[in-house]
Image 1 (cartoon, one colour):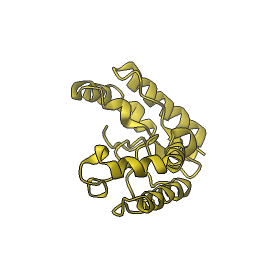
Image 2 (cartoon, helix red, strand yellow):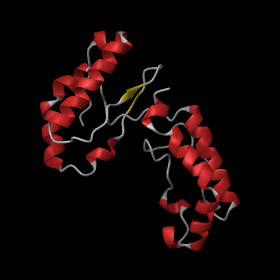
Image 3 (cartoon, helix red, strand yellow):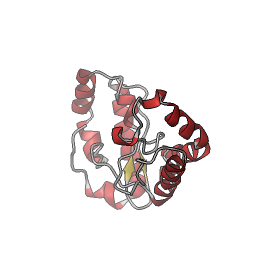
Image 4 (spheres, one colour):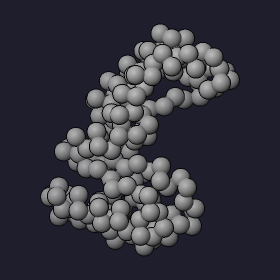
Length: 166
């Protein structure tokens, strides 16, 4: 989605901005991406969106939605390509996952920071250099992720749009 500037009125009133974000999301849903969820606006003005629903949409559908919804996206000051920093609770949960995975045979896993990319609902994930050779089928990967299931689930929970909105 394009990066567009929005109105000063939406920025000054969080309720108006939430309404504008809803209107932009509704427009996106009406223009070919029916599973697109409303973005959430945090108290400090950050916007989080779960872009996974865009993965199954064709480039043409995304482009058409961008064009059709440009006014609503602008009004909402919605910049889907601009990723907000990870909140402290999510970073803390991610650090616990990294510590657990390292303790269970995955020494290359790094602690996330607020600037580490994450996917709402799925947490930080792992980079290719953090995953052992053989990927998910590697027994060390399977043992570590099973041993750290509780921590991984908590990281995923902390990354949901509902938690990010708090």
